[in-house]
Image (cartoon, rainbow, N blue to C red; front, side, top):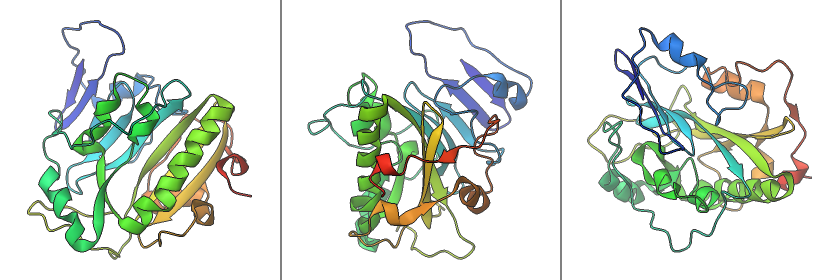
Length: 262
């Protein structure tokens, strides 16, 4: 199923073995009538009109081909989706939906500027599903400093899985933050791009209880994710996005304790 408007493209991954001949709508606004299960109370609004909205069985993202990073990524983790990923390959995959990305070689050279290829959607969260390899698409990849990737970012991902084991499932919304003046170096790549200066991650339980974090690229490896707590309002201000456009109630910042923050 594909929806086109100019350079916008929505491709809907199917959970079931169904075949559609295609669907063409006259305007992108019509696509907003679709209920995307990865997004809690609506997918974020405010990203560039030229972004590619890619919907797969385990996540949805809005990819910015100018910055070469998704502007936001939404997914839902459950007890059943989490698995053991130690033997699963993590080689980058070219995304046939959005080929205008950084390359696998670009991320290999990230080491030169002290960075590594990280993933917005972690492979462990979906290692228990047949779709685990979809996290390896380059549209789900982003450059992070080693300190952040191996420290607070990794620690928060583990905390989310611990929360899911207690709550049954959780929605996650994550993405980059770009500051007025860059605070980190770009990769030694030929394609124009911008490495994010920070990242946001919001976790919401099925009961509507949430927690928000803003994770800086210059975070040392020993910095705990709990030291980077923030609010949804602050993230909206930093990104220019309206994150939960269909929400009718305030999402309470009340699951920090279940994420190891006391």
